[in-house]
Image (cartoon, rainbow, N blue to C red; front, top):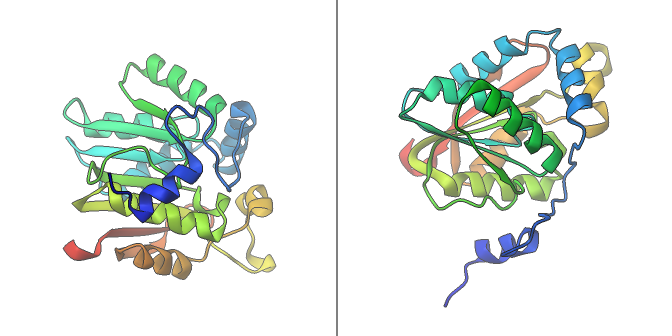
Length: 228
């Protein structure tokens, strides 16, 4: 049996039967604190943000979607409502506490979402499974090497004509910092051009990018280079 470099990298983060996947990034474990922070950051308008993200990702009925770093599942639930019964949504997070809350929310919303306890550096899915991969305010939690591993994994699990949407905090000067930036200051920022370069290194070509239009968030939409 042969092993690829990607297989070797995955084994560093999660092995068969390993119930505690490891990541070099920051993992949030308090669903309550997380949701309070999100509510304050978006002034109670998280629904508008979720819909904006789905629109930017061009998520459509019948598609298969992966939410990397799904947190408490609000975006994954919104995505499932968008793709409908003909589509599917998977949510992945390194925190069991977040996933427990996400599963409760999905049951309450009466939607089927497949949640997985795993890390962004080693996605536990086969090649070319998803039409869309979403990553919202997650990349800044990862150190540089882990970001590249995550990007390469996203490229691997995307279908040839698939799309990845990365949304994260822009890096501004202190004079331009917003209320939202104070919540993520300990975790850092990611410049848009750095995201574009990172995705390119992973084999993904940017087709659209710019400000989300909410706070100091930016987005990058990319597709596999071979199919751009």
